[in-house]
Structures are given as C-alpha cells and as structure tokens.
Length: 164
Length: 421
Ligand code: SF4
Image (spheres, rainbow over the protein chains, first blue to last red):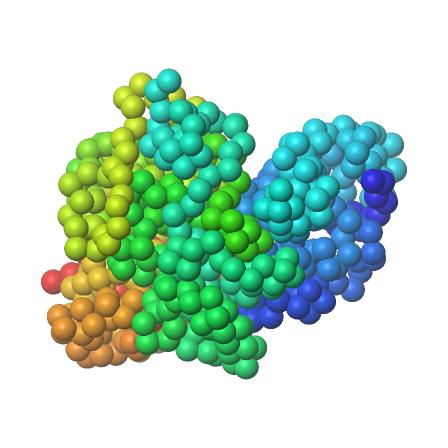
C-alpha cells in the first residue's frame, strides 16, 4: 500500500492523554474523538490536517493509558500512518488491532520536519521525504501482526481461528 | 534453560517447556478485565464479531470505576452498556456502584488475581498484579474482546530486566518512592516492552500495599509487566482471599537478564515527580518552595488502607492550609469501611479534607477535583502528563500519601518529617 501526505511533527513521549484527553473518554464515537485529536499538544491539528496526512514523532509515541480511543481518534482523523523512533507497547498493540499502520524508523523521524511532503510504501518498506529527497527503509511489521492486519483486524482473525 | 518467573508463567499457560524472549505465543488467561471506559469498545467489537457467548463468565471482571457514580449522561450510557452486557452474560465479577472500587485495588483485595496467574486487562495499570507473583499486563479493548471470546491472548515473550534494592528503607520511603526513583533513573521508556523483576532485601521486606504501588507504575517505565517473587508476605496476603488454586513460581538463580540495576536506598528521601513526566522525580527537599492548590490522596497506586493510615498520621491534630483543597478517596468499599472503623475519617474531616466514595475521579481528570488554569496539585496517583487532571496549564506532582498530606497542611510540597508530631 502506498501513502502520500504532509507531516505533523512532535517530540518524545507523546502520550495518550495528549492524543485524546481523558475528558472525552465518555464517548467512543470515532468522529467525536477525531474532532479532539491532539488537542492538548497541538490545538491547530484538527483544523490543519487533511485526509492522508502523516503523524511523525520521536521516542515512545502513545505512552500512557491503554485507551484504544487513541489509535481510533488518529484513524478517524484520516491520518494514514504514524512514524516514530519507537512506540509504547499497548499503543503498538492497539494500532495493529484497529488497523492503523505504524512505522518504527528513528532515521526518518529525525529527518522529517513539520509540513514535509512524504511518500510511504508500506509493503516495500520505504519512506521518502520529498523536501530533503532522502529515502529511508524500515522493517516491515512482524509476521503475526501482518496476519492480523490481513485478516482485517484482531476480531476477524480470532473468529476465523475459532471456526477452524 | 534457566527461566524467570514471567517466562515460567507464560510457558505454563501456553503448554510449552519454556518461553524465550522474542517468541510469539498464544496463552490461556486466568482472568481478563475491563472498565467503564474500555469495556464499551470491547463489547462493541464482541458484538460486531457476532459472538454471543463468553469463554467463561467466572473469568471476566468488569468494574465501573472511572466516571462513576456517573458524572454525566454520556458516562451513564457507557456504564449502562456494560451493565446490560454483564447481566446478559451472567458475568460473575461485575462491580457496580456500591461494591466497586478502583479496579487494581479491588481485584487483589477480592482474591480475583493470584500468584502464578496470567492476566490481561484493558487498562494500562493491569501490571499492578505482578506484586502477587502473577504475569499481568495491560492491553487494548480489542484484545479484551478477543479474550472474552477465546480465553486466550497473544504475547511476545518480553526480555527480562532485574532491579535489586539494598539497604534500609526510611520511615516515609515506600513502594511509590522506589518506583519514582527507578523511573527517574531509567526514563519513561527505560523498560519498553520488557519485564521489570523487582528484587533484593528491600523488596523482601516490603509490605503488600507497597508492592502493589511499586508494580502499578511499571508501565510508566514502558514495561510490559513488573513482578515480585511470591513469599511469606504474599502467602499471608492471599491466605483469606484465595478461592481457587494458585501456584508460586520462582525465578531460577541463573536466569538471563538483558540488564541489571542495583541501588542502595539507605537514607533516600521520599520522591516527588515534577510535571509532566513520572520520570522527573527528585528528592522531596528539592520541591519545597512549590506551592500547591490541591492534594489528592487516592487512586490505584496509593488509595489503599496503609496510604490512608500514613495520611492520617500526618493530618492528625493538623489543619489543611486554607488555600488548599485536600481530597481523600479510599480506593475500595472495604478500604472505605476499614478507614471509617479506625476513625481515620474523623481525622480527615477534622483537618478539613473532603472524603469521597471510591472512584478514579481526579486521577484521570474525570471528576471530583478537576484543576483550573495554572493550578497545582500534589497527587498520589501515577501520571502527571499535560492536562491529566484538568486544564492544560495545570500541573500535577506525584508523591506518596504522607508527602501529599504534609503538603496539604503547609500549602507547599513538604517532607512528612516536617509535619509529623
Ligand atoms: S485510579 Fe487512575 S490510573 Fe488507576 S485505574 Fe483509575 S484512572 Fe487509571
């Protein structure tokens, strides 16, 4: 799958309270959650983002709570993927389970600045920064994660497994 | 091969001789947990998948603790959804207002998690139960939905880290201080994807409430789980609580660790984590000029009876500063009743504190003590992220219960010694 979009850049340890503040957790409606996505760290994010844009951050993206509302909010905000140095483990799991592509690439995350145009090839494992004209390769997701994504998410995977 | 307690538990739950770091395994779970924030999404996924039966109604715990007693219509709707699901599926361990407590205080107290268990919860602080010698980790709602159907979960066997604590623990230095100190040293991703094995002479003598507070915050270092080998203190704790079989696992002495840290805690001061990360921890004396507007004593980290006793010891015969709101929230009904019996509520009320029914409340900025712009709170909870307890320009400092109580009295962050009589 090929993705194309402009980047929104953040630093280390972007936590789930910043991705979607707890005060909105009394709802699980994706569009409502998307309308408050990144609100406390970047109030302009919701106004400025377009479908297909890409969030880029440094170490430990998605740390904090286990709320699946975080990847749901990002996905419903029509962000096509998240690139970071590393991800917090529950966020990583939740992203796979809900079908939000995530990429670990410290080199790309260091190079990319806010507003850069990016091209990502998920299957080929490359990220291209059109501004710096640099290309970065990344490790595809582990096979089990790909199986889950191919099945269409954890639930479909599990139900298929159960019937066999 | 020599193995740690986590590797042994994961091996036993996936019917294999051994579990090696990096392996992907499907493990049977002994209990799965959801709350009023995460269960509604799990239930939606469960229904979308067309499931109509859970794997075992006695192995699922649903606890309505975050926005309860309901703070608004939306949270009431979410709770109603979980309530109907629990009724429909005859979920044995469903806890509603009147029985519920903050989940990670409630489950161990009620004997629902036991040594040797493999537990997942759709809540990041599910790692708390490692204090009992269980493998226990936080997952997302979809994982919970899948586990409710199959009784299984996927894991990547985590790499093992070891933390050894030597020396003598000071009177006001508890489990919370050990973990704040540790996260301060290794950072909020210092144990990412890994297991934190807590050990050494200090841990062997650490009371269970402190062990629970310690393991509660393993996730704040990014860990998959934290664990303490079960011993006499563990057995004493579960003696009257366990209603099913359990197994005590030990780590082999020659087990492999990717990193080992060793510290002497003799003479260490209570720790305070400055905004906006749990890793910004410093000795309390370095925080002493910081004025506060609120003190919150409660949560799944430090809302247990020993925390309330510590707070009461400080507050007895003292008054909360007139510029401070001090909010005390016992973590469960049982703790609430015990505190009442011991006369702790009189001490709190005489001092000018507000005492609430169990709830997560202000810990996650839900209700019962939200901060205004520019306000500062010292809290016994586990996260001090931007906006965690209210306005984005408010600040949260993390500490143990004695420090929070002493600070409530003086109006600025204070070492308990300064106030204790
Ligand atoms: S007390 Fe706070 S950290 Fe603990 S379960 Fe509740 S919201 Fe989460």
